[in-house]
Image (tube, rainbow, N blue to C red):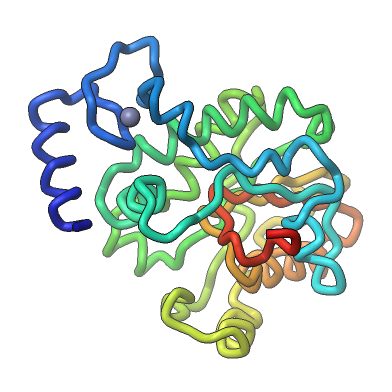
Length: 239
Ligand SMILES: [Zn+2]
């Protein structure tokens, strides 16, 4: 099914280069990449409107964060899941940017993210960038930053170990896998700032926790909030 879906999508984007980034249907420029039907159907979490929410609570006891949210639920078999996969591996970096613009506008309007100073995308290891040619989280952060009128810093946090993909690992392995993989370059530049760490998919939170701990160790007086594009539904206690 997903192969057929991908083939249809590729055909549509070929015929309609400005088609909807989710379903591929033709759209006008003013729709910013996503058609009316897909905007209506999007499984948003609305976590960004409340301080207490399952994403922020996910970090309780793990890392000290100010705010935390995710834009959509990462549900198996949905078009949105296909979309995120596409923006990660399929070369469709514009999807990440367009989604970022939408998510950033929601964060801007929520009121909880008003004192953010800078957005930092979770970096990929340079070898992984060579293979994929881009980091989807950077495009996501740039889209968000555009709506929030804030700068993006993609140089201060460095990933110095090319850990194997988290998706193939079980819970406890994920934690051992990410320990000490991040370091901070020029920590003085982040002093006193409120950082919004941006990642594509939040599952256990192991990768983000490793990055937050590295930032706090290098820059004790900075505050960190977290924004993921998608979150798996199973971390929601009430669902
Ligand atoms: Zn659509």
